[in-house]
Length: 633
Image (cartoon, rainbow, N blue to C red; front, side):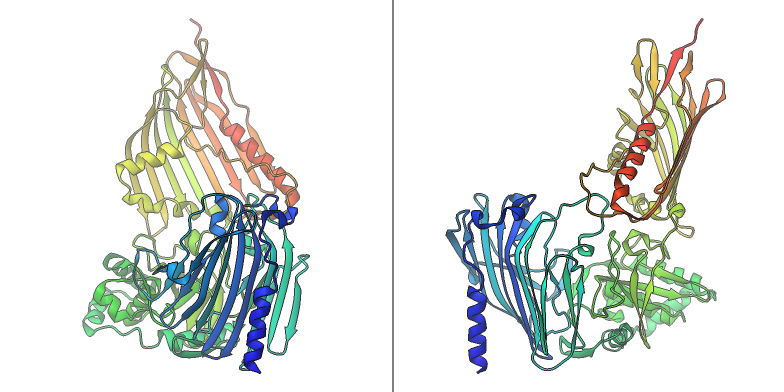
């Protein structure tokens, strides 16, 4: 009976979708604003035992242009205990005629990790095909069997911007009676058909039109319909686990992934204790240990040990002096333990785009780990993979998001610090001498902290050519820019950065007859104006705000006076504020002052035009010029 059911399921899987892959059979609304159309995306997941999951999938994609090539997804990841079978791809032309068949033996089998990875069990089979013309269609199918049930696949009904979906089907079935959880996200008005059974769920969606990317909008994953899946009990590389709460998941990670991996040699323990022998303050001990790790180790990816989630042991990191985020974090944790400072291994979704661990859906999530150090009335964070990041500097990589702190008692979901907008601060001071040959020379100091520090501190290692490249881009509006001396001061204790730059430019001013036109904002123009969007559909998102303050002393050329000044302006909006003024300080000397505050937040889509208008005004005034004329004799 079971054989008959599997046979029937296979037939239905093969023939339930029409084989007409011609371009003309695609509904017009799916082609508008599209680089590719997913004709069919079908996945059937069957958990047959705690340690056996089989995923049967078929994906058909019509690629309309070269931008759509990346959406074919004709690959199969696998680990050493996994099996990939029935792997095949068929290529069709625009008329839906078969032109090529690619068997498993023709796929490229390679490491799934980049060249920066020293050890990895992860591999991937990749289809090798270079299109000769567009459009074309790829039909890709595979069966994937794994003993690891910890990572039940989630499902998204839309792939990406500018990709439509003609048909999407997903089913998840558990045959061994183990409970599982699922969460439907952003279903809205997509008309997704859902069906729940005693031992599983299934979904089907049809004719989902492509989404257009809009500037300053929510991340794609926060917009599209998707299903999240998690097993209450699971198996991962020989280890069984259970997780229905974040506390329970954290307890499993502590006991199975971390326990016993913090051992160090007596020589190392003695050495690190000697480093802090006269120190009682936990914060100062942490600084010393963190400095030691930064000076004596380097980052390299190691994808081994319980699905790549177990860190290599602290003693191994101590011996070889390298590790990945897991290994270096665990090593730092072990060193702190040796000097009596408690710390917690912490899991995060890292990246400039803020992404939370889903507080309502406990499961193995995240792509990075770092270290939490609790103090008496505070807590600090350590980015153990970086040789330059200061103590307690989160930066845009890990700031303002839910993370999972792993303690011996279990997991605790906490939120990392969010900088107030005004703390993402930059102060620019300049002394500028204007020459009477349209030239300028300047001495500039730029002080930064918060997220603006995050954009600067790593530049201490820049070569001269890298400095030239950066400042010529940063001050791209200054023609013929020539750099003089450049100096950096990185205050890691206060997490502040100071740039000192000397420069000159021979053709900065323009002339009109015997008059000179001069833009006083020489060192910090904010000229970025968001693109115009007709019929915007998404809210406006400003993830991080900031504050810029500028004060420039401008010395006029001999024999010239101001004919026309820039009128003072103050703009105050819900998105921020802007103020600028130019005033005489003494004969031949002007003082330019500017203040720009951008406020973080989520605003309704109707506000996008208002925000764009505000930024246009800022750009316009940042470009504004004063008129100099020759003194009358």
